[in-house]
Length: 305
Image (cartoon, rainbow, N blue to C red; front, side):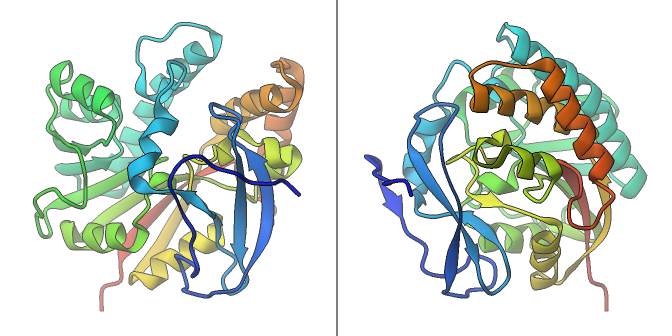
């Protein structure tokens, strides 16, 4: 077992953020392979099976874990092979995201929480949608505001509340970063129109590639990811907040991208053949109920009585 020692401010959760149960087991011990190399623990709730980083950096101290020139999700101009692949995948997925929004919602007004540098919202805005974003990272927020002319707030929970305002609210790989889970879901519920749709994209830590790479699975992304969801725990979260999960859509490209990063974390170098094989196996095994895809998009709607 790792001896976990941290120099930053931490908080230790004594109750499950999902079901409030107080009995946990250690699911996995790993390190921040991306930046600090510090050690972390993922615990699993014995009550509902939810997995979460515990202890975790406090909300105020988390910013330092994003301070890297290689944190490509917030750097639209970074060069190199992995950033180039990321940008290529992003270009493909932006259009796919837009099609999902248009297909499953009557979207004229959209809020994207964790919008990064605003590429997705800019794409929507160019097609006539009324767009607003939220992004905590100052650099990314500035790019979205000044180069994409988007309205972007710095914090969702403190921004002016607009009751039943949005046709669609999206979190593309953002919910796993957010400390105040219930507060965020409650505010989303209040700002989403009665027949609106909440779209959440998340890594799936039950996927084949997650099991294959174990503690080296890049989508654990400790400690930036403080929550580690599965299909069952997303559905639990939806029910808790009086919503229903109406559809799950796979993100098949993620299996290959995450496998490539995981190869580097596990072996110290990127092995394209092994990564391709792992990503392919993950997608092929995704139909089995114990697996699912490496990343999945969940479409949630309010329960209407």
